[in-house]
Structures are given as structure tokens and as C-alpha cells.
Length: 258
Image 1 (cartoon, rainbow, N blue to C red):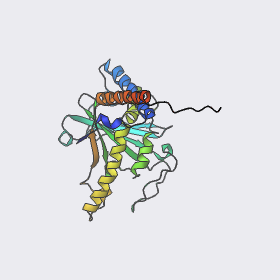
Image 2: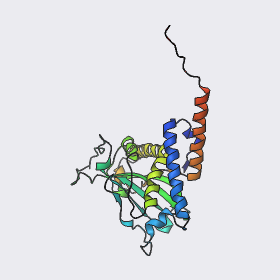
Image 3: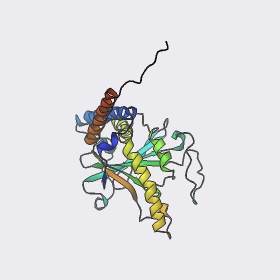
Image 4: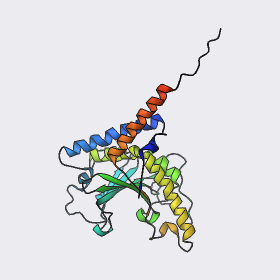
């Protein structure tokens, strides 16, 4: 499984890095507030639901922001099907009424216009959590996994910017945390989405007798190990680098008309 090197952030514009730094402060603030009472973002979604059942969505009915049309849920696979050390994962989505202008589904052979103008949702990214309730992996999936409508990677990348969950239920800190995670790991998510489409392309070439989007042999299309602490350190280092570049480069000459 790939790891994302902090040096890959060094080429980002300063504005992007500052947005990621703000997201990092938000992620850490949410985690710190929850930790004071022994809670985690995962625990926030499971609270009050009794026995944890595999495959069931938590909270029931998902979390949905009717203003931004962002949606997510948490669930667990059977223990034997989970990567070692992982508890479960979030799936994040955006519905059409929250998508940027000009975004349209890929015209696949089996595409059908939905009954509602807000039904053709897109999966954005999966966020896997360890047993301590900390994020450890980002991943993308094939279409059949979530029953999504398929959009091109560059369009899904644009959707990341509009994913916002800005209400208090079932948990204000959990909603703020997952919104900020999308910004903090934006470069990695962009890379994973491009790799997702490339995986789909290669699989279709190598398995000509199957319809790739419904092929149960292909589930995870790209993934990467993450660490909030390492990402925060990488952002801080990249920001220091932009400050050094700004201080070293001379001012452009200014000519004053005689």
C-alpha cells in the first residue's frame, strides 16, 4: 500500500497549504475536544445504537446535510475481511444538487436517468479508522461497492471542495472533523481519484469479458496509508519552505518614469 511523502506537498501553492493548515487545526480541535471525555469521532456515531452490527450504516439513515447535499456513514466489515488493525470506515458522498456547475455523470452503457434530480450521487473517498478511532487509510472503490453513479476523477476532485456537513446531528465535532479531513488530505484524495480511473481503465483492458464497474473481483481501486500527525508536520514544513522562497526571491524592478 502506498504512502504519501510529505515532500510531495512542497510544490503546492501557498494558498492551498494555508487552507490545509486551517483544516489541520479543525481536525485536531475536534479530536482534542472528544478526547477530553474519552470519545472519538467513531464513538460519536455509534453512541446509543447498542450492539455494533457488521455492514449496518451508522447512524441509521446516514448523515445528510440538506443545504450542501453532502452525505456520509460509518460501517464495519466482518472481522476476517478487515485489514489488520482497522475497525471500520467512513464512506463520503455528494449529491447532484451540491455538485459544482457543469458536472455530469460519465455516459456509461448502463446509465439511466434517475427519477429524482438529486439521486445520482457520487462516492468521494473512504476513510478507514483504527481500533483507537484514528484515521489510518484513504481509499476509493469500484462503482458496485456503494451503488454510486460514476463521475470522472477530475469532476469528483471538484466535488471535494463543496463537501460540507454543517449541522449538529448526530455529532457537531464528528461533522466538522470529516469536513476538515477532506481539505487536510486534498492532495492525496486527488491522487487517489486519478489512480482510481487508471485502475478501472487497466482492469477493463485486462478483463475484456467482464463489465468492470460491476466486477466483484475489483473492489478497492486505490488506497494510501495516512497519519494526521505526519500530514500536519508536512504542511508546516511546506509552509516554511514557501516563506523561505518568498524571502529569497528579489522584488521585481520598479521603473519610475522620468
